[in-house]
Every structure is written in structure tokens, then in C-alpha cells.
Image 1: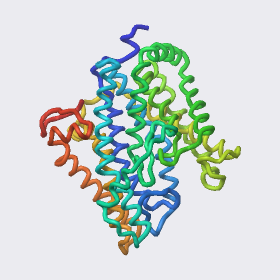
Image 2: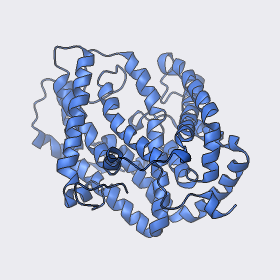
Image 3: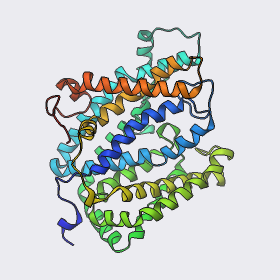
Image 4: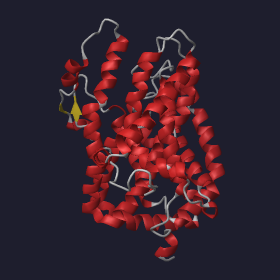
Length: 395
């Protein structure tokens, strides 16, 4: 099979993946607002009234949503490497991911920790300007790669995704060539036997079971995300793999739902499912990893309908380039509104609706008026200089 039939034209854009990425990023506002009402998650601000229903719904979200973002990021890395080559790709990713990471670490992440302290202790009255340098007091911690800084109050917060993505891109750049050859052979094998696409469920299960789940990284082990990223880079845009995903979408989805349902006893009534070494906990983590892979494969297959390709509409054209700035901005805004709302004398659903509505309004307004219209601020948030405000920006 020729290279032309293995991959679509370089200019082709996967509109369904653009849409999915935007939905996941915007959905994180709903997700993190819901954690305010979860009895299990150690979120920054907690409502007095909680419900286990949030835990169940959040669990189904984390099993596929963040893995899907890494698949899409891996696909983007393939196209960027093809245009720029390894060295320019590494420099570009350092700028587009590293700069907003530093900016948000200095300006946004301390707010979340400061509000956490205030919410946990009504007697805590330290002014923010005194807490800020304490947040930034760090020491090296190379053993926790790629999170190489640690401190009493320091954390990467929701920017763990950016840290991992930057690390994966820099690890990928020097080995992209050899990996491409292996990906072509894998694509040919999948084209002959589509069921091979279910095999990655095994290493996903093994990584999560043996290395443990990490609550701070959306309940996945960080190195499982690397496999999703490499799949996106090497195989997600191979036409043979895409055809196989479409064929397997329904059975993979059914299997994914069944595996995820099998995790319920371990998460609800078993030993600590994140780190315990008991057989029950190991099985729970293995089922979780396998379920995540199957659900990601199912979603990719169900959404991939080339014959229905459409030109992006104005809403998608507006939101696609906003994905990274919206991601960077969303959690500090949600935490700030949650801090102000949880004390209201109303029921939890009203509080939740208020947090979501106010957060979405502020995040979108902040992007439009604080980021999108300024060339300098666009660069600080990882965006291209791009067209002038008011024009369509899709790539």
C-alpha cells in the first residue's frame, strides 16, 4: 500500500477531533464544578452537602476524556513534526506549552492553593501577597519526573496535562523517525486484522495495575497517557487504522462499558483502588485501564465519518484555537466562584448551576477580551499570532 493511501492529505483536518477537544475542554468546567459536591475527591473547595452520584459520573468522565486529549495531541504532534522537523518542533512546543505553563504557575495556580487554605480554615487570614512567595518556594525533585519541582504549597494543579504533554513532545522529537517506521508496520497489521486494535488494552491495564492510579492526574497513571499520545502520533491518522476503528466501534464500546462497570465494586467497597497491592485493587485498576482504551477506540471509530466531513462553523472556528487558553484559565475561575458560592443558603443544584454559569461567562470573556485580541497575550497563552481579531482562525 502506498504512503498516499496510508495517510490522508496533509491539509486535511479532523473536524470531529477538533469538536471533541473543544467539548472536553469546555466540559472540564462542568467536571471541576461537580467535584465541589463530591464526597471523595480532594478538591480545593468543598460544599457541605455532597453526593456519591457525582463520583460515579466523574469516574465515567475521567476514564476516557483526558486520554482522548492525549490522542488528539499526539495526532497534532505528527503533523507538526512533518512540517517542522524534530528540532524546530521541540523549540515550537517549548514556546507554545512552556510559556503558558510558566505564566500560569506564577499568576494563576497560587490563587487555587490560597483559596484552599481559606476554605479549609476559617481562621486563616494570610493576605495573598504573603502567601504567593511561599507557594513559589520550591526544591528539585527529579525522582517525580517530569514534575521536577516540589514544595510545601507548590503544585502544578490542572496544568499537569501541560507538563506531561510538553515532556512527551520533547521525548518524542528525537525518536520520531524510527517510531514512524514501526507505526507503518503496525498500521498494515491492523489493516489485515482489525481486532489487533484491542491489544493496547493489555499494556494500559498493566501500567495502571502495577504502577498505580494517580488521583492528581485524573485517576490515570501518568505513563499510560504516554501510550495514548504515541497512538495518536503513530496510528490515529492512518487510513487503515481509521477503517478498523470504524468497524470495531460498537463492540469496543460495549466491551468498554462492561469493563468500566466491573470496576464499581473495587472503587466503592474495596481497598484503596489507587495504590493498594491486594488482588482486588490490582484487578480494579486493570479493568479501569482496559476500559479506558476500549472507550477511546469506540469514540474515535463512532465519530470518524469521512463522507460527512463539514467545513467548521463559526463557533468551532472560534473555539478550536481557544482550547489551550480556556484550559489554562478554567480551573482557577471555577475554584474562585466555588469559594464564594458554597456558603449560599440554597440547595446544591442551584450552587452548581451558579458556579458553572458564572465560570463559563468569565472564562469566555477573559479569552475574548484579555487574550484573543492582544498579539502579546496570545503568545503568552500558547497561541499563534494569528489573524486579527474578528477573523476566522481555524488552524
